[in-house]
Image 1 (cartoon, rainbow, N blue to C red):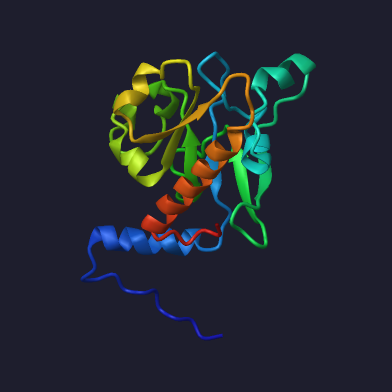
Image 2 (cartoon, helix red, strand yellow; image 1 turned 90 degrees about the vertical axis):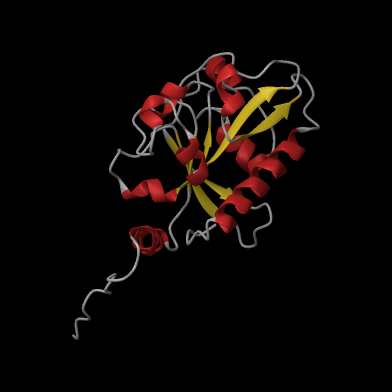
Length: 197
């Protein structure tokens, strides 16, 4: 077997070198969507109900499952069919990769709770101090809320897309579902992602 020498990055900027590494690692891998681990009145999505919405375009409140005694998974694979034939798999989880994991390159979207501490141990410039500009330039952020309720104070300065749901009417869920996937696609195309999406 002939061994090729590693590709030289001499003369290539550090940022360009990072892009090569990111593309090489991420190419063809399954994208990851992160959801909050917690509960609360301001959290519309967590592991109880996120997968149902992302596959079936319907919001079923997480406390519906919780009251039934359903077990809360920490990770699920979903099949995305919207604008995809054949369908494409995504991983949905409330467990963020470890700080130094290459799997951060697979994280494409996050549902935010509105609290900066959600991102405390994330490996992005400023995240530990609550400065989330770098984070939301690399991962598309989403905040889900009921249309009649005010948003969490924290998100007013964050670059996140707000998904607005009617509290007792489900016919508008599809529009939010489409908005989610369209925003994810735009973000990945803009960043020339090599993930399988």
